[in-house]
Image (cartoon, rainbow, N blue to C red; front, side, top):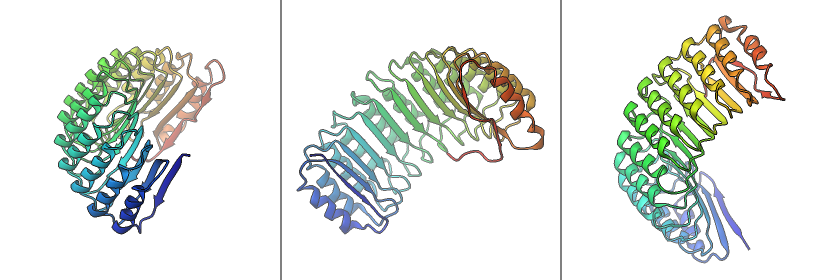
Amino acid sequence: MCRTLRLQGQDVADEDVATIGKSLLQAVNLDSVSLDLHGSKVHDAGAKVLARGLEAPVGLTSVSLDFELTQIEDAGVAAIGAGLGRAHHLISVVLDFSETKLKDAGLVSLAESMTQVRTLISVDFSFYGTEVADQGVVALGSFITKSMGLERISLNLSETKIGDEALKEVMAGVTGDHRLNSVVLRLAGTGISDRGLELLGSCLASSRFLTKVDIFLNATAIGDVGAVGIGNGLGKAKRLASVSLSFKDCRVGDAGAVALGLGLRKCAPLSVVALDFSGTQVGDAGAGALGVALGAAADLSSISLDFTGTTVGDSGATVLGLGLEAASQLRSVSLTFNDGPQKAHVREKVQEILAGFSGSPTHTPVTRRAHAAQF
């Protein structure tokens, strides 16, 4: 019989987690462990006892551990990694060490230990707001490269100290010789530059199995050069069907938007696109050219574009809508512009154009808002 252990609570302390760890040593037929310790009083001592327990259940296939805002440090993270590394039937692992005292040493140990698990299919790691830098993430890239069975991976490295070199290693792993098909990278507020995004684009171009990519670059130094680099890479990708890119509060302008549109147009069999340009330098020319390019994407069925906080006005929105009219397979549309009286008739104008689509499309109304969504 399959059994699941779940625990949640901010009042949990080391002795409580240690008790769970000791209980796991006696566990029978346990296949799933989920512990939400967010904001609790757990330190390395409790994590170490828990880690020993994670080694015991023979049939353990799924583990989810949330240590966000706890007192865990490198030693505790390394212990958790060592415990999971001996759980040889794991298929899915979710680990959240966001806003802890984790540094490179702990991440290197975690990555090296997780390499021992050959059965992994899905991994979700969050290191948001930690002191992790390039050394730790390079080790993470090595783990991805060696995990040949991985199909899905999500990494939250936002507000860490990583730069282009770390991104290069991660992407080398992502596009390596395995069947990884879905990737989520959260890189907001990091040191990623245009050069890093050019490298990312090159990796996407060489990927043989990726079908879905979600990349969040909010509040980085990315500009048109980086956007052109990733646009070029997307244009050479072979199997991508879904692409979501967020450039919120970056320095991307019209040239970057044009390059992204041209790249996505060539990206077959692309069907789903979501682009967030809120707070960027994209204007009417970029928005219009983007619409024309995406309208030529033969398989495009769903699109979401956010221009909140840009200078895109009525003329750009109109050309955008006219361009999208050519996308014969389009069924779902979401367009977001600035709030303000000068945009009062954008909704009606674009909706009129979209109403001409064939079939029975579902159009999310064109909206106007003052604030973009958080990353």
